[in-house]
Image 1 (tube, rainbow, N blue to C red):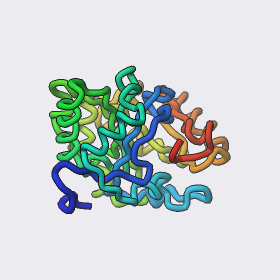
Image 2 (image 1 turned 180 degrees about the vertical axis):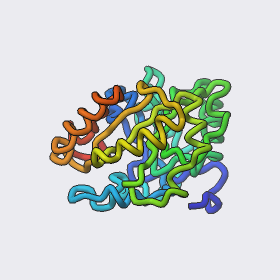
Image 3 (image 1 turned 90 degrees about the vertical axis):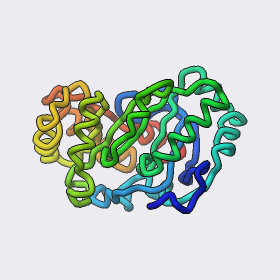
Image 4 (image 1 turned 90 degrees about the horizontal axis):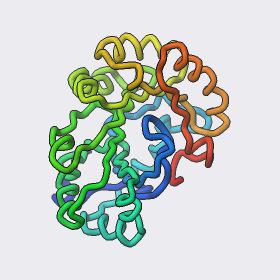
Length: 252
């Protein structure tokens, strides 16, 4: 998962590449968003596999594909598609994956390039699994990005030393990032409380619980259980609107 095979002014994008939609999960749910989905991830989430999501990670089929695009090609697409205007009118520029911070160094260069072209930087929110520490540059100057973290519980199937990085979790807790947890069973709450909320003193209002599901049908089967847990612990409940509305996890 190295970036060494691509140039300093290029990024690896997923099969989805860049698309305009509404945010389907977490803190900014329902808000117009231009998604840029990057390739590669450092986790598998194989424990999330279900009949309707056989790979575990519902975006695996997209981020496992690498499309090399230059900064110029990305900006040209944003302009010609009309997405630049969406961003100018307040849509979130959602940088996601896979794990987008694998390409963090080049992403910072891309935002500098974007500023040189447009003289402004869109509102940026990252979707990250909170295993790679963000650069302080994301919070400085004209960027001031926000972070929606999705830390993976032991039910995701990856070993602790890959999915649970206390230094990174502490950074996000101290910066007020949102914490979104995929809930598979009620037992997951013990881990959410003990290893995250209590350990890093995360305020209940910064926590979102989301059903583990890969289709509209699976969403309807588990949502009530997750919503009751959110009520019990004073956390936020997050549906997955892309499944509720379109019954698709990708390209909507």
